[in-house]
Length: 447
Image (cartoon, rainbow, N blue to C red; front, side):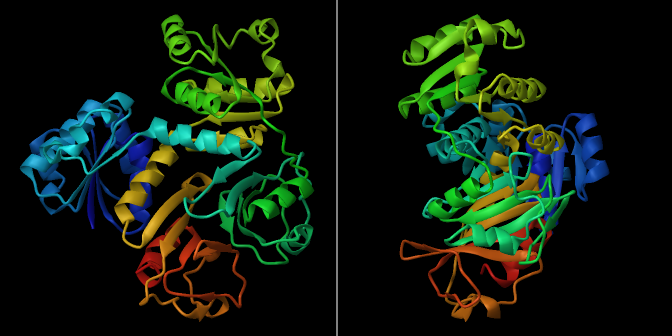
């Protein structure tokens, strides 16, 4: 499969990296020579410096042989025009565009085949959905969910608040009297598929899977106490912050938004009268005392400056705000943020990449979540009658290395399967896998 990607920023780079690991033939285009230089140094693919709307550049990238075209630059207009050019000049089956302006989605242009966009992904909308979902689950950890499953998936960081340091996976399982497992551990840039004797260490990230009841037990027994979130402080009234404010206010929470742009504040206040909007500079620490912002249960930082998001979230917690969620894009900032005590980090980049990968794969694959900063994935797929795992017990399966079946949905019932669980055709299965195992998983299992 040949994939041409326009845009070598965080989103395009991440998508390219994932597809290269799956042995796809990737060509990356960007007009910024600094971005193409970075991509050339770190990615095993052809990288071109040029405009994604230029026909000669597209031909140089081998667009005539491409199966998929993806445009994810920072400009909605460039992305849409690139897809339009490709649709009208070349015969590429699938065309995807990153479209950030929600107003475009309200038009009928995406229903017109001539615009040339088969799928539009909105990073801000995907990130806002992730934030709201995390809040709904108590903002204790990062949360991943699948549409038809009630099983929960959590990324739990082992810090001083968590009392799992030194405990074995077997001992942790004994804490929870229900279906539950630790599917993976991220430790020092490596992912471990644990067994019963594996010892959890401080600064580990645990990928926990279980029913709502068992996850609640796990968090409680681990020392991660859930707090009912009634009052929410949002820093940053941009597209993500305003969307989150709208959703949480609609769900009955008391929401306060702070932004230093007067016009943005005025517009938000007029649009959502139930939301308290404050015009001010969050970097001025007097605003916390003057407006009693420390009385909120949760702080969510969604400005376009991720360093400010991290610092403000950490500062808010030092003043007594119990939970913090920060919007972070750079991969190296994600781990730093969690190590600083931020309860959950949301990345528009990773949310967008997951949405694009989910659309590209389709077929039997129903959903994809990129986890552990892109080092692994949780994939939901439907078992076909001809699948190599159909009508077999879990302990009889020959799965690729570092993959694990973590949940099964059958006839609206959810299971955390043990070794004697039999996989049947029609089951919806969730697999946890390191990214280098995904290609083999798709070829041997997801067919």
